[in-house]
Length: 415
Image 1 (cartoon, rainbow, N blue to C red):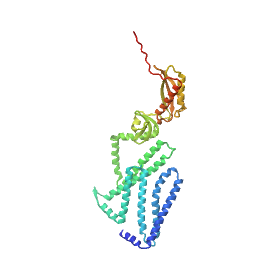
Image 2: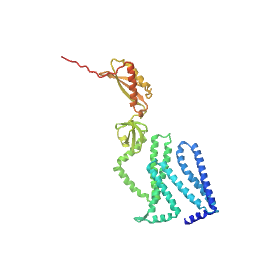
Image 3: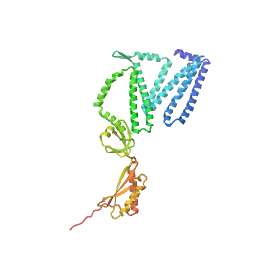
Image 4: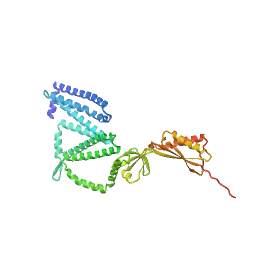
């Protein structure tokens, strides 16, 4: 590295630096133009399902294109003169591409959160630190130091460098597995011909399979004998059978629910007295959003072992019953007509089956009526619907002289 910096210092006092700066500047300019024109064209012509991935790749394309053009110019110019500045620029562009690529992959796999931003900052610091150590010539000495520092496990010497390589390899393998899993998940979830529950099951199985393959590949890459995992697998099976049987039951119940099509996203359920809409389906639990906005987390095992009322199993139509009472002196047929017309005029009430009014009985104070109607949006709740209908009915009753009776008692004085 000392010779490298001396070469750059010598080039600064000659005309060779102008050729290198010209190639570097033209490479950066061409990369910027190519990036602008190519990404704009692709974003305009690409399908909607590709635009998310292309939007992330555009942050990586500039340093990669500039690196390729700089490397080509360096290869050509290397036949006539020194190319130290281009070599330095290539190192910096490679570091920029690695940082942007890592940030893009993390943001594509995981939702934005604090730990993702912290991981990005850690990657940025690690990459620039490696570049600084490389340019100062301290990287080989640091590698030798880490390789010599370690401890023994049995007959094997374990160094700090080996541990760091294992951690980096495992992290890179798992991130690659999760990235491939996200790509396959987006592809499967966009297949509208496949049932939604089956798509969810396939994506979960693909992610679990890819994570297992990634872990095994990482262990093999660092020299770990994966045949030793057979003992761990047996112990894990015993643990699931005894200590984790409830958790295993919830996960197994989740796959059963998704495969037998008994529940779907958006269904109206009543579970343990909770009435609401299925908002999320996970491997271990279900999230039921109640009509008041609160959310209930219900383990999947409860959905298998207890009675669940699915109000939208066959269709989404829900029945609403509204009791009323009119006095014996009021015209009964007119009152029933007013109630039926008020229901028909409401935009949420279905015309088929049409609203119906029946006489429920002859009460102590008046005639008991019941309005029966159907709606196709039960997730919107029934309180506002009932309030609007009662207000309309009460207004029409007052206009037509129909009375709602008060409780009455007759007291006789004997003697």
